[in-house]
Length: 232
Ligand code: FE
Image (cartoon, protein in one colour):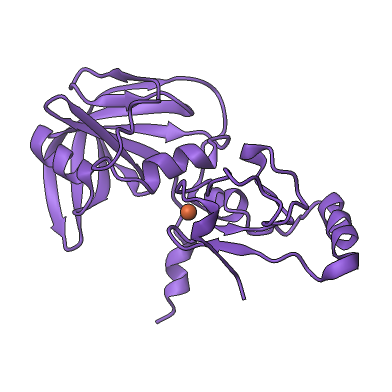
C-alpha cells in the first residue's frame, strides 16, 4: 500500500468550536465536509482526546469557521497546537455566540456554519459528528485556506516557484560560512528555514536561527527557541 495516495485527498482548514456550560473551546480541523443538501448537513471528524470532542459530545452543537489563506501561523498554532485544557483560546480572539449557543470564531474567517449534532459515528481514535446546519453566513470575500496551501506554503516547504530574490540572498549569506542550518521545533515539528524567514513575525528571508530574537517563538505552537533542534 502506498499511503502517499492519502495525501492526494484535498481538504480545507477550519476552526471547529463548541462549548460546555460557560466554557468555550475550538480547534483546527481539516476534516469538515458537506454530507447532504436537503436538509443541509455537515460532518466533522474530531480526535477523542481533544477538549472540543468532549464539548461537542456534551452540548451537541458546533460551529465551523472557514479560514482565509492569509491566516497567520500563530493563530493556527494557538487553535491547532495548544490545548484548551491549558489556555483559554477565546481570550484573545473575536467571536460571537451563535443560535445554538456555540461560539463562532470570527478572526481570519471568510464564512461560518453552525450545526446541531444529529448523529455521531465512532471511528476508533475519532468520532465523526454529523450536524444539521442551523445557520451559515459569508463574512468576507477571499480565498479559503486549503490543507495543501497550509503545508506547502505556510509551513515553509519551498514552493517550486521559489523567488529568485531568496536564492540570491542565500548565496550571498552562505559565501562566507556554509549553508544556513534549518531548525526543527521538537514540540510540533515546524521547521524554521532561514531561506524563508518568518514573514508573520517580520523575520526577513536570510535570517539565521541564531540571529532570531531571543523572544521569538515557534509560529505554529508557540514554543521558545530552546525547544528547537538543528536539522542534521
Ligand atoms: Fe512548534
